[in-house]
Length: 438
Image (cartoon, helix red, strand yellow):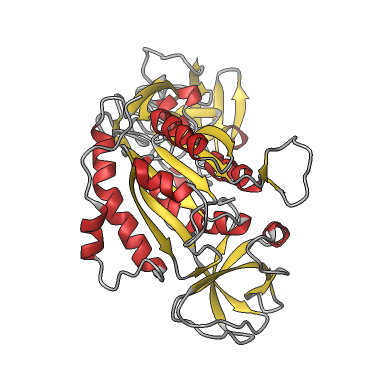
C-alpha cells in the first residue's frame, strides 16, 4: 500500500516552536501541542490522497465518516401527504368555532397512489397515512373525530384541531439542493435513514485507517501459551484491539515480538508496509536496556519522552517512513490512559472526524486524595448520585498502573491537572466518563 504521510514538518522544527520543551519531564499540554503540530501536515497529505476515500453501500456504512457534503437530490417528502389515517378537506373560515361540518366523501386515497381529481366545496376524501393530499385539500381530520352520517357523507368535529393539521408538506424535511449531511459526519442510524430517504444506495466515505499493533518483550506471552514463571500474558495488545475496534478502524495485528533486533526490525518494516499508523506497547522507557528504541531510531525519526503524567510516563512519537508511530508504555492501565489522552484524538482526526478529547464532567470527591503539583494524574473512579442529586466520585481500589481490575470496576477516570494539589473530600474535580471510550 501507499502510506498516507509524505512531506511533513521535522520533529526538530516542532521542538523549536515549543516553549519549555523538556523530553525528560514533558507536560500533557506540551505533548498534545507537539502531536497536534506533527499531525497538521500529516492529515493534509492523507486527505489529498486518491485512495483516501471509497464508495460503500449504504447498508455497510454504519459508523463510517462522510468524505464529502451530501446535498438532497429531491424534496423530502416528495409530495404533501397525510400524516395519519383520516379525511382530507379544505378548512373553512370559522370552522374551529363550529361543532361539526358535513362533507361528501368523493374518493379514497391510498398510500403510494395519486388521485388526478380535485375536491370541490363541501367535498372530502378518505386518506391513508402517506397518501398524497388531493388538490383542493389542506387539512386532515383524524378518524376518531369523524362520524359517518350516510354511505357517502361524514360529519367532522373541527373544534379539536386547526387548519393545516396532520399533513406533511412537500420538502418540509429537505428541499431539493439543500445540504443534507456535512463532510465529517458519522453515519449513525438516523443519518443512514436520512440518506435512504433521498434514494441514495451508496455513499462516499473516508477509508478505514489501518493501524498496526504489536507488543514487545521476551517476557510477554501470547494468549494460549502455557504460563511461565516470570512472564506475563499479553493484556496490552488486547486492550488496544478493543480501543481501536471502538473507533471502527482496521487493525493489523502483528502479535508479540521478542527482544531480538532482527525480529523487531522485520516487524516494524512489515507494519510500515501494511498500515498508516503503528502502535507498540513496551520498550520505550528512558534508560531501558532493550532493542526497541534502537530499532525505532534506525528506521525513522522518533522522539522519546518522559511525560509528567501518572500512569503513563514513557512515550515515543515519530515517523517510520511515512507511517505515524506511537510507542506506549508497558503497563496495562498506562497503555489505555496514554491512548485516550494522546493517541485517540489523532486517530479520530486521521479518520476524517473532529479531533475530540474525552467528555469532561465535574463531580464531588467523596474522599481526600494526595496529589503533587507538577504532573497530571488519571485515577480510576466510580460515580454515583447522592441524596441531593449531585454527581459524586470515589477511587476504585489500588491505583497501580498494572492493576486492571480497578479499571474494570470504575466507570470514569478522575483527571487531576498538572498544577493541582491535594484534593479534599467534597471538592469538585474533573472526570472522564469511560462509557463509549473503552
